[in-house]
Length: 125
Image: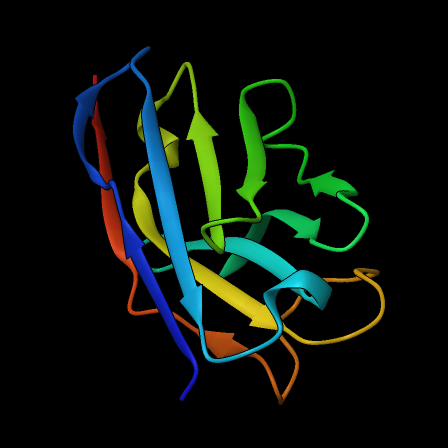
């Protein structure tokens, strides 16, 4: 069974940092497109960062570029999202998603994507 379990969310002040973790199991982690998404109240879910586990390629949304870093630990099947210089507009539920495919062009949010339960990030001013 495929499982994606997020952790690391919490409440921080503006300018602070958090590191989110996504523990993956039940699929070929070494050949997957892994992504972090977020959804704030009243807004659509948006992609934040994604990573191709096989080659290590990464992609960031403009809102995350320069502040967030996505990385992986291949030995642990874990994907991280290091979030720095957090701002109130980063407040959202953050979700981990995965698709087993041979590339990571586009967000891993298709019909066959797997999703975690989400972890809340709240940034106060």
